[in-house]
Image 1: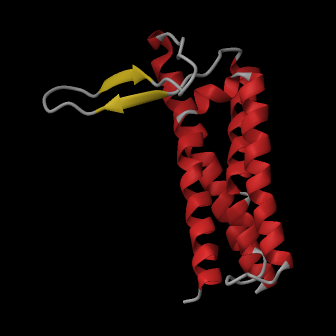
Image 2 (image 1 turned 90 degrees about the vertical axis):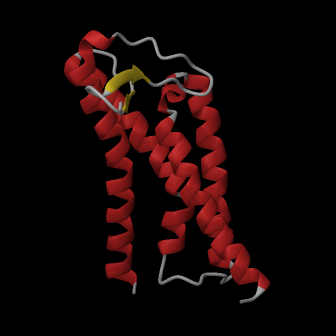
Length: 156
């Protein structure tokens, strides 16, 4: 394995790992300035993929590398779309929750804060927040995998 191939796989791993903090701390995406800042950073990471594709440093089939490098950008957009859709459909602001398992008794539900922003939800909408958390977690993952499959089927 050469140095260029090692950088290639390192960029793929970094881009894949960047999706988890975006999903886990999606409360920070509610701030417009922070969302734009994250969007610029994730788009510039995606541009690394375009540069490596143009220099023929692609060790994957077709354009799959672009999906990996643009995955933080796609995740940000999908999370924001889920936030907007939940707010428009139900007229209630969605907040992420975490369910902590206890040794004895039912799971303990807590509001999940972002890195910079505090979660101001009310646990009387716990079932709504659980659905919101499920969709904001699952939708970016499903869309990314669907894009990878589509690209693989059409370009390989």
